[in-house]
Image (cartoon, rainbow, N blue to C red):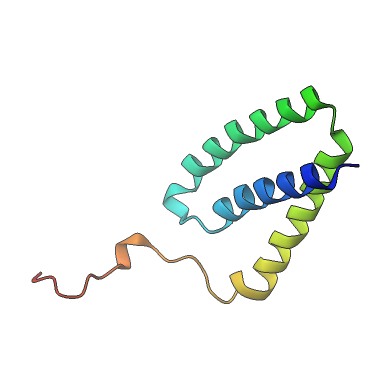
Length: 92
């Protein structure tokens, strides 16, 4: 098993899961569709390079890390809405 490919795939899977997890509800569908396209490209890379074991290990590790992030941080700091952003210094 190649640890370099596993680490790279873990980072990529982790970022994709993190983007979906921390996206506000109104934009989540768009981000999910973009993520599905990225996952298809990753799947093709895994099949072409024949690194199936590394792909599954990376996916499981990324899922576990994202779950721990959600458990320890994400539940207590929910994603806010972009409607609530206030810019200081605006004359509205």
